[in-house]
Amino acid sequence: MTTSNLQWKIFSLQVATSDNFEANTAHLLKLIANLPKHSIIVTPEVCLTGFAYDRMDEAVQAGLDALEQIKKISDDKIITLTTIAKEGDGFVNRTHVIYNGEILHTQDKVKLFPLGDEHLYFKAGNEEAMKIFEIDGIKFGILVCFELRFTELWLKLRGADIILNPSLWGKPRKQHYEILTRALAVANQCYVIASNSANSDMARSSAIINPNGQANSHDDHEVIEALFDPKEIKRIRRYINMGIFHG
Image (cartoon, rainbow, N blue to C red; front, side, top):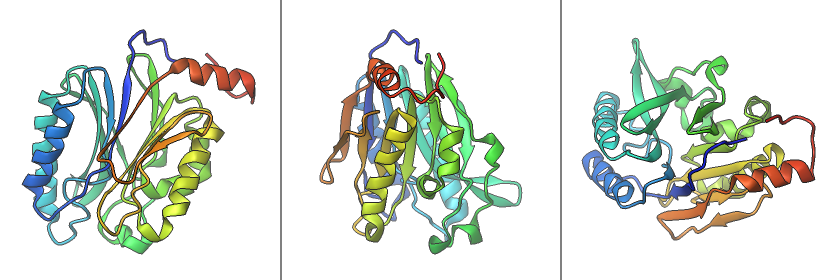
């Protein structure tokens, strides 16, 4: 359980991505800068560029530039950004967690979505690198988009206070996204911050879901917010004691 004495607010950003990488970055930076201190902010998967398979090197540079700018506005803010990154002679789908001017955690997407041809353009991450990490006494885990479908990965993140879920999830499978994110919160008795794209072909359904499975979700909002209450985690884990959580 978290030992943080700060009162954190949770934000799920539900933004659209255009072909203009610079405009996407500028809009995201403005949204983040306007959020209060002690914020936990999740952005949609590859929201700066989308899966720009015909502009991969350009997308990599856009991500690097954005990370440097986000570091400058990350004082007392925990920010999750997923970018296309260069790895050796290939590319990975990489999630970065930034706090107080530093990247404290990175994680490459393990399960690549075949319907989106991700496996043709990206190297898969190492599942062994998927782990719970801690910032200011809060335990976090990350599942990126398609990884939600693999419940064996849920088990790796049991004990997390918050699971971050950046996504680019399609509209035809909207109900799946809503069911899986809520089920994850209930099964792992934690908060889930689901941040999905607002593009017209995407499901939206971004939400902040508490450990009891109650979701704050607005398909027409760019910013969805809630208060992080660690006592809610403690209450549900005591009420329904699964014998798997400690601390």
